[in-house]
Amino acid sequence: MEITEVRVTLRNEEKLRGFANITLDNQIVIRGLKIIAGTNGYFVSMPSRKRPDGSHQDIAHPVNSETRKMVEDKVLCAYEEMLKSSSGRTKESATQTGRETSDKTETTDSTEM
Image (cartoon, rainbow, N blue to C red; front, side):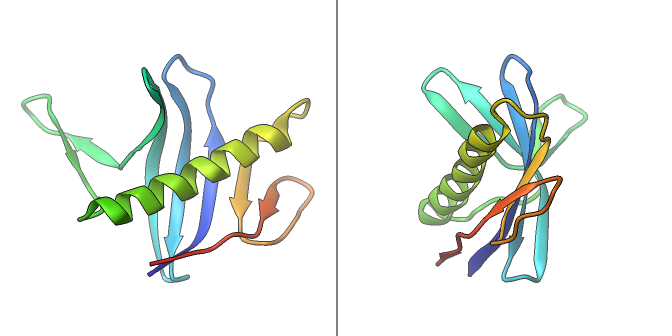
């Protein structure tokens, strides 16, 4: 499996730093990953829904730690690139794929599993 695209949209909230969408093998998109500023640095929260009892249940998630690390590394790398590219600019989203456009910055990087 390969993460073929990562799209990041920045937020400037206390803990929520951004949202990410990932594309797997140019075939499946997972939307709604959250980039969170935690006490020990940034981490990626998978998309979830709130249950009637107030708890949250992941909608999609990696089934092993290696895949979770791959997703988190890829998303956080795209987030860091977005921060660098948006310094002094008003850019709102970046994509890692290998193209550059006038309204978003895109860099090449693919991760295979």
